Length: 358
Image (cartoon, rainbow, N blue to C red; front, side, top):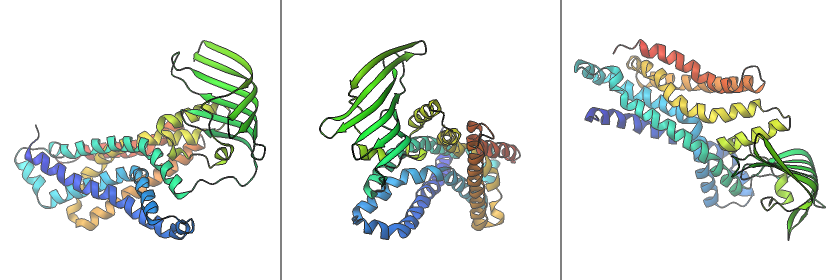
C-alpha cells in the first residue's frame, strides 16, 4: 500500500530527477546556441524558429542524460534523507532500507519507460529540427555513386549512380521488409529510372520480387514501372543520410537488414540500435549502484554527492564510447557491446546493494 512516507520519498526523488533531466539538456542547448548563433542568423532564421528548433532537440538530448538524472536524484534524495536521520528513524520503526527506497525504484522504472518513449520520439523531432535549421546539406556534385537511402515506410533504396542534370538513376534496388502474406516483403530491381517533375520516377527494365514468407518468391518482370511510394525528388536523394540517432528502433533494424544484404559492415549500427534499449534500462541498473553509495554522502555533504554523481556519469559515458568502438570493430558481439556498461554497473551495484545495512 502507498503510505505517506512513500509519497514523500517519491516526491523528493522526482523533484531532483525532473530538474536534472531538464537542466542538463537546457545547459547543452545554451552552449550549442552560443556556438552556432551566428550561423543561424546568417541563414536569416527568426528567433522563434531557433527557439522552436531547440525545443525539438530536447527529446534527443534528454534521452542520453536519463541514467545520469536517475543517479543524481538517487544520490541527492537518499543523501539528504540520510543526513537528516530520516532513514535511521524509518529503520527504528521497522522499515528496512530496501522498503524505504521502493518509491525510488518505481521512479527509476518510470524513467526507463520515459527513455524508451523518447528513443522513438527523438528521431521525428530531430527531423523537424533539421528542417527548421536547414541543416540538410545537398551534395554539390551533380552525380552520386553507390549509396543507400533510408526512405519512409521502412523502404531502402540502393542506387548505383544518380545523375541530377538529366535527372536519372542507373542500377537501382528498392527493398521493403514485410510482416507476412498480408504485408509481404518485396524487392524491386531496375536497370535505370527517369524522373519528370509532373509524373515522378519511371523505373525501366527490371523485376519485382514479392516475398510473402521464407518459402515463396513471386517474380514479375517489367519494361517500365511506377512506384507510387517512390516520391523523393532527385535532389532529396543527395541530402545527408539519416544518422542512427535519427531512426527509431524498428526503422534502424530494417535499415541494418537491408545493408547486410548488400554486404555492408553493420556492427556499429547494431550497437547504436541496441543502445536505444540499453540506455533506458540503465536507469534501473544505476539505482542499484547509486543507492548504496548515497548513504555515505553525509561525510562530504552536497559536494561529495555532486562529485560522486559526476564521476560515475563520466565513467559510464566513457564505457559506452569504449564498448561502442570495440563492438563496431567486431571484436565482441554488437549486442554485448551495447549492454556491457550496464552489466558492469549492474554487477557492482548488486554487490554494493547486498552489503547495505538494512
